[in-house]
Length: 517
Image 1 (cartoon, rainbow, N blue to C red):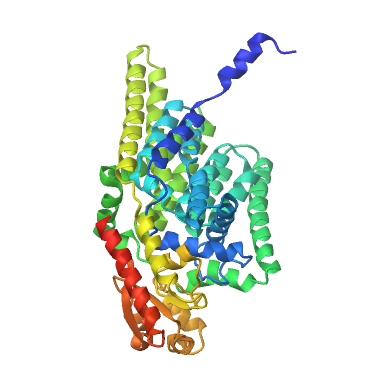
Image 2: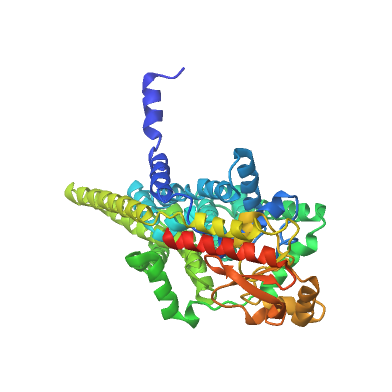
């Protein structure tokens, strides 16, 4: 029978701050709304969603080089949209937002447990909450890399808590969403297994559970592809196309260009990334002096430092645009939180109460600053640009026959917004994909273009900023009829003149409405 004192003790042990951080994140990030424009990558995953919802395995209908769950989850979002009776965009964005919005709360728990300090957790969560790129991407997706960050943070928390089987499952799931996460998580797990203490038998058992979790998850995934008859598609999309053909420069190849891009995405907060990353690496090294007095904490700091180092090494040699920076954010915010935790442990040992009051006040001020500036940012960038994109897509496809065909180069937005399909499974061609097509298609790119010319799609969509030369031979039979927000629309010469005129007029009206708006 519980005594009243037992109940009070139980309630005192409950930490309400994870819920507080969840609510704060919903308010701050959600204030932007869900009507911002679909950028290319988000539109690509949204475009793949209906194919998965139609029971097509990832990589079969749409060639993608990210992990299969980057396609599967948009498919779940499409089903959610149909259940709610709303658009695919809103359904998918709501699903991704519901998952991603938990990240600051998870970061709070990770920092609190790793550094044994709630102040450390609050400092880390506030820093992540205040990053503008997180607020922007959370409602403008689907962005698989942001979902990867959530999974990465969950995995780090599981490692800190030594939940080895679940950590193995999480590592596999995150890697099957975006492959580079493996280079941040697996070394961290290896380090804590090596130096985490305990007998050799205990560590071998932990390693076995971690491995079983990962292999079981991979096995279930591959088994699903096998049942769908798409094992080869999985191997090509997840591994072969990346290992043999993907090309992408890293930070070391163009440091100033990357830094300028990050400044535009993060503002002054960009300085927190290198500062926090260096702090996390320093905390990992300082764990050497903690191994006798606090071995568990030393192992936690080491695993977080190695995870940070893995993200830095990967980014040094493979870094595209600002969304790739999200791989660096967990380590950076944990490093800043860890420094606050270090100060918290120091002030506890002082006889005067003033240092602790100063630290608590400074952390509270940082939390308030992050919430207020984050909210001001999200409110200031509210946008209804999605409406203009939808109107341009409708202007095109509402005036074409239902059985009209489309080919697109780097322009998935109209297809995603209209549930139309390209006649080619290749939609994105950058980063080595042309080389992959050259190797996989009989006759190489010449044979690929010959097939397109023979198919004679009614519509060709090209980006405004280029990619015309790639299909120049195809375009001899096409004429431009108008523009969307970020794309050009071409119709085949054989399309009925009346249809051509209707499409041109509708696109012009949609463009005029966007300009007036």
